[in-house]
Image (cartoon, rainbow, N blue to C red; front, side, top):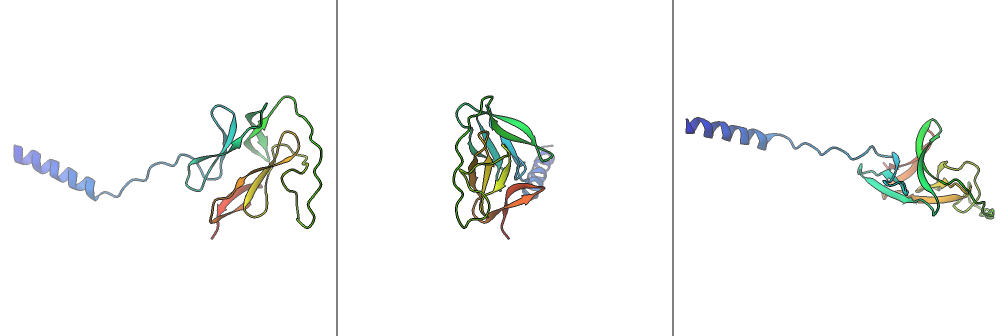
Length: 150
C-alpha cells in the first residue's frame, strides 16, 4: 500500500512540474482609466497591465466618472470652478499646449507624440503624463492612449 501511495504522489508531483506555468491574471486592461480609492486622483492601466497614478486631483476637486465620447472616464471635478486667464499660444507649435485655454473640460488629447494632456475643470490644458519608453501617444476610438511603438 505504501508503494502505491508513493507512486501516486510521485506521478502527481511529476505532472505538476511538467505543466506550463500559468500567468498571473492582469490587474487591469491596458489603456483604461479609473478614479483612485478614495476619489483623490486618476489612474491608468500601463503597458504592464498594472494601475499607475496619472496624477492627483487639484485641491478642492474629486475624481468622478463622467461620459466622454461614448465612454465613461474619470475626471477631477468641483462644484465651483474658477476661471484662469488665457495663456498666450506658443509660436511654431501646432495644436495647444498645457497651460492654454480649452473648451471641453475632461477631454483628453495627445500632447505631441509622447505625452497626454487633459482639459481641466477650470478650462485650462493640464499635463497628465509622459508615455513610457518604447511607446507613443495615439488615438484609439477617439481617445488618446500610450501604445507600444513597433
